Each structure stands twice: as C-alpha cells, then as structure tokens.
Amino acid sequence: MGDLVGHRVTLHGLASRPELNGICGLAESYDEDKCRVVVHLEGGVWGKRADGSWAQSAGGGKLSLKPDNLAKDTSLVGSRVKIDRLEGRTDLNGTFGWARSFDVGKGRYQVELQGSGGAMIALKPDSLTRAEGLSKTDWMRALGDE
Image 1 (cartoon, rainbow, N blue to C red):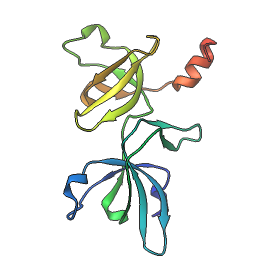
Image 2 (tube, helix red, strand yellow):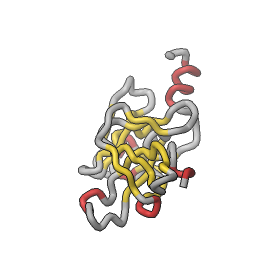
Image 3 (spheres, rainbow, N blue to C red):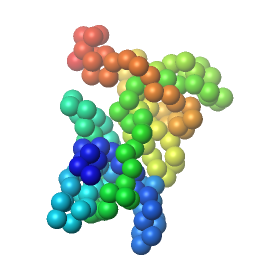
Image 4 (cartoon, rainbow, N blue to C red):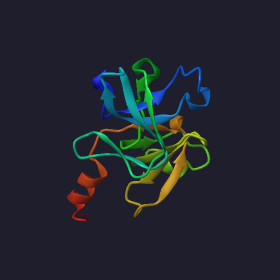
C-alpha cells in the first residue's frame, strides 16, 4: 500500500472513530511491520509541491490507519479550476482560478481568482471543474510576476 504515500487521502469506514470519516490527510509513510499508513490529518492549507506530491503548511494530528480505511482523494486542491453555474455571482461564470484549500465544515473550496491579485472566494464543489493549464507559479512566471 505504498502507492498511497505522498498522496492526499480521505478517511472512511472507521467504526471506532466515525467522526473522522470524510476527513482528508496526507499519507506520509507506510509501516510495513504494522501494515499501516501514517496519515497527517488535515488542519492547514494544502498545496502541491513541484514534484506533484501534496504538502500541508500546518496541520492536525497523525494517525496510523489500515490501507482499507483510506482512499486517494480526487480533490481539486492545488488545481487550476473553471468557475461555472454560479447564480449569485454570474459575473464569475467562465472565469478561472486555483483551488487553494477545502473547508470540510463548510463544504467549500477557497479559490484564488486568476488575475485578481490574490482575491479569494469560497465556492461549492459543483461550481468548479478541473481546468487544463498552467499552475499558478508557471502562470506568474509567464507574466514576469514571479
């Protein structure tokens, strides 16, 4: 189950700690002796490193979990996204940004709007689709703003 290491994962099927089901974390390592994955629970801002692995700026606690209780997360965090299907802010439909973090309690992504100088907006997942294109770092480099 080393294929989970370095990936963002979602916890599920925990009978003894059901309040943790649905929480995300970073699979940091695999303990072969115990057949468990060490997961650093979400508690800070997530982003992707240059090598494509996930990193967390600050975080929650760590747990050692069975691989069967983890699933690779298909989150948009760290991705360039297209905004669509907004009713209250129709001016943003068709625009792009970067999903910086996900607030589990509110069920919304914090999205940095492209070309806004860092302005952030909280959006529901069904208002976002993964978009092809440059990472924010590459985009800023292309504009000479790095």
